[in-house]
Length: 334
Image (tube, rainbow, N blue to C red; front, side, top):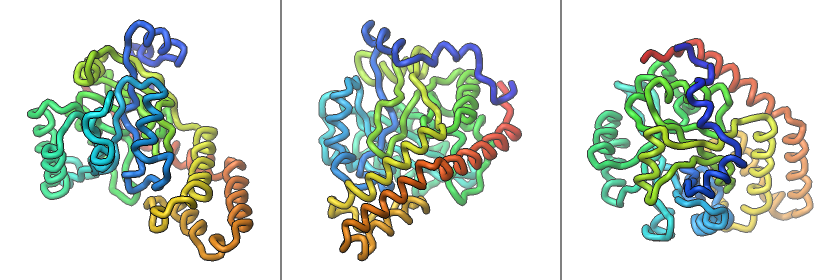
């Protein structure tokens, strides 16, 4: 089946927030299954992004299941405790398998304990064996998701042609709010072809959880996830647009120049993303630290550049070119 077309059978899975409210009134549960806290290396260590703050925010929003999927760490659960109301242990583990895959994957895993986490990290970081990793997940009946299947790490050597083969190994694929519509439609096409579930997530690094989410029935998380895997679910989706990216950039500017200035833990923070790290280094300069007025002027300059839409347009253009290249390379075969 050619890629790039929204499968008709899956159109009914994509619903509006208004339709979601009706389902929730009928007992459907909702969750955002990809959320980062300040425990992730690429999230600013500010109060608003602390696990406690985000946990309280999720409860106030009415999320039925709350999970935090920080990069390769369970620190959020060491802070919050593992048995909070509605809290589901989660983590995003990166695994590079040079032989079977050829590039790194990000996998969200849920409902594990400490021992299982460290065993999974050993497979990921020492063995670099995706098949062994997934056998472990299935043997221990742990829910897991293939995150942003068509995203590839910067400076990596991506292998898009392997994605359909890899997708067959996962029960659920991710519809990621920070991906272009073209990539999310490719993911939906994969899900339809291979009978996989779809989960819509924010993958937020700025505290914007719950803007998109997944709905399913389930008196507990395991039942909730099982229904997603069976396709008995709905998603309230959103895709990356120029407007959303401008808003995201402005949020980062606010976090870097305002909120992180009040945090002692932000001094050595770097995201690994060149453009953001440049802003961080500028905001930490001795000159700006000594002159608050200059700090405000610099912040406003970054806002002005962001609001022109030029950085967002440049990024979207580059991402669209990559999406078209992926589409040329991929065809799903049942």
